[in-house]
Image 1 (tube, one colour):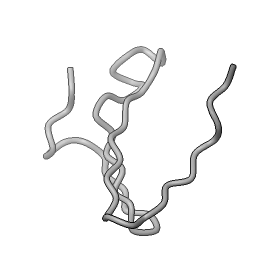
Image 2: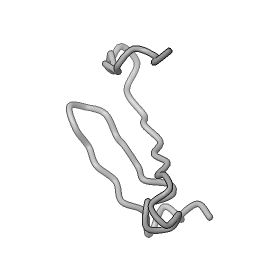
Image 3: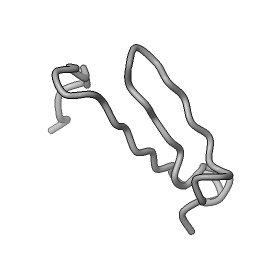
Image 4: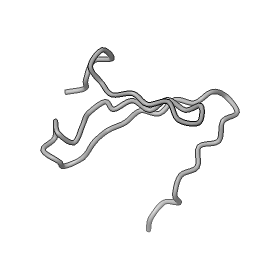
Amino acid sequence: MISSQDTQAALWFLGVLSQVRVSGEQTGGAFSLTETAARHGITILAPPPQP
């Protein structure tokens, strides 16, 4: 169940908005799902894919 925008946690950090769509609490600690939105031109650094 994806949380509604009224109840989900949201965090602005360095010009990037991250919203928790499904929390670890909702999945019994199995995973959490976040959506991240950034303005055009913002570089989001992420770790490289794991083999």
